[in-house]
Length: 274
Image (tube, helix red, strand yellow):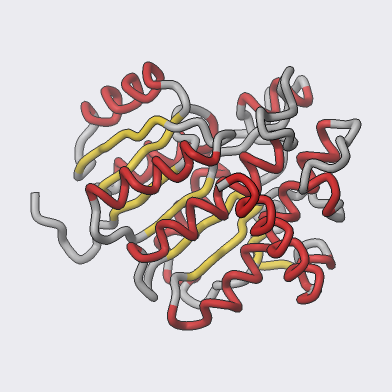
């Protein structure tokens, strides 16, 4: 199938359930070419089968990687680069909140690794595939709290899952803004999005014990952020879907010096392990 001008090649991480799967279904129905990432090969195969049977998806490829391992993030980027010379949109959706094993083999909090480090590393490595018209949509959250650089670096352990999650999401929002400013008009738009609070994802059900709201709320805004003209000049901005508009993130994400410190800490950790 030849790619037409409206058909996009879109990577979605964490696409086997929750908002990621709902977004994949929505984008497949619009006829885009999808690169779907997941941690579980069987679940990915099931998703590929379901979406392949529902036309008019232009094409579906799957990639298995555990984003808690930096080498697997690198391998994911390498696999995508090997099969694609261009990429229109990256949706960094994969995230983690509750887990019985919060510390990775590298001694880092897994919330920071999956929610902050992995999307940063993946985005950096995929940057040659993204044009100035491309977009990187980062799944942020209404839960944002000041980042402990010591916790980010694995020097101290945070006692509560929610604290680690909220800090990891602010770190993501901060590097989104920093990278957008660094790239300027030469790079793709980097956009942080709160898809909506308490949506019916596995994360919400396990973390808060509630059914949650319709996942299409989150899928809809991620699809708009990836494709809609309203996001043409949104690089560096934060869209709060609870408010239904661009809004101010946590004040630390508006502090250039603090954003630089978080990015420097992320780079220092990656340099230590890569």
